[in-house]
Image (tube, rainbow, N blue to C red; front, side, top):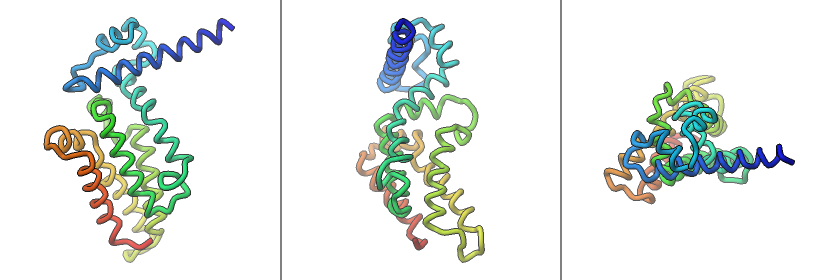
Length: 205
């Protein structure tokens, strides 16, 4: 019983830390302005506790990001169309990218904090690799395994195109367009949908 209570307390404390960090990043003018000291104070825990549980600031940012993005990942992995794996790829690709963009819009400063964390190439991150793999697989299903340029060309296109399409949802680009240039949420979504349509338009299902 005591062990179960300790686990429950640990889970509550973890969520308290994640919520405090999330709120601080959302309120801060720049993600770089939020320190581990700030997060520890807001969560009511010692800074040493944060380092023991999350390793460093980047590990904490990643934990917050993963916790907030988990419902979306579940919808993509196991949910119904248009996000789920049973969806037709021509329907799924635009839906996936719109969902990623909406997540970045809803969690702008958290997403920006993760991209600015400086923990090596963002393309090596597990979350990026996962999204890239989902998109690549959907594009390859859509375009097939043989193209006009020969067998295997479409598979290469799918890998590259997945990178290009995800680049259109980067948090720093979202921050530039929405935060500085004043593009509205619906305007950003419409522009992305039009761009995705042009990328997919030259291919046949």
